[in-house]
Amino acid sequence: GNSVTQMEGPVTLSEEAFLTINCTYTATGYPSLFWYVQYPGEGLQLLLKATKADDKGSNKGFEATYRKETTSFHLEKGSVQVSDSAVYFCALSDNYGQNFVFGPGTRLSVLP
Amino acid sequence: NAGVTQTPKFRILKIGQSMTLQCAQDMNHNYMYWYRQDPGMGLKLIYYSVGAGITDKGEVPNGYNVSRSTTEDFPLRLELAAPSQTSVYFCASLGTSGRFGGTDTQYFGPGTRLTVL
Image 1 (cartoon, rainbow over the protein chains, first blue to last red):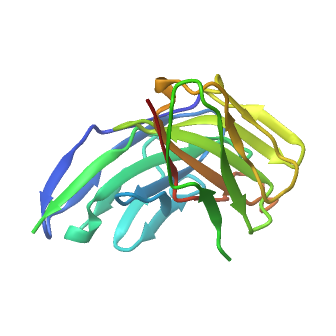
Image 2: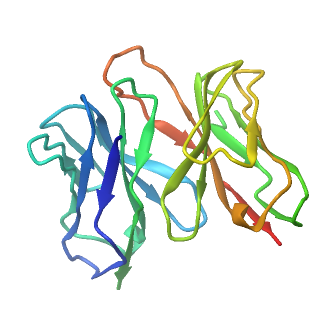
């Protein structure tokens, strides 16, 4: 079946540092890929998405590129802020866009 | 639009009690989902629905039941609560664009934190 693997956290960075959170996936067909963010005490919010190979999703300074050859969708940000502290989930949906699989989440803490 | 709403926000149950977690969405979405999130873990799918009157099991359905009598509402029923059901429960909905390839996004409610003692 489909699956998503994320780098284990927690990740602790200083403000303005570069962020990478690795995500790889296993899926049949042509999944769509997502990054969701969960702030403390809240539900998940979509951060960005990509629907086909070589697409780049971007939002709020975060970027991720759909790499079919390496089955990856790594999240990056050039300069993190304290307000980026949250848990980040990589996810995919199947061909039909109905069934979602989530990774275990990576907790990011950004220190001032 | 209120989006996806869930009630209650918090609940403490005793072992063996029953309760219903409410979920509603006002976006006219066909697909709705229930997930649980255990501490430090990702989301696990409990049940989902592709439209009114249609539900199906996810990865961890045991101990739960759902119904979908309307497009808007998707309640989750816990019968005979057990400590293993202590978790945060999230409801989500998904619109359908009609485009093959899964371009749609799930919208999540704020969650219900349930403790079973």
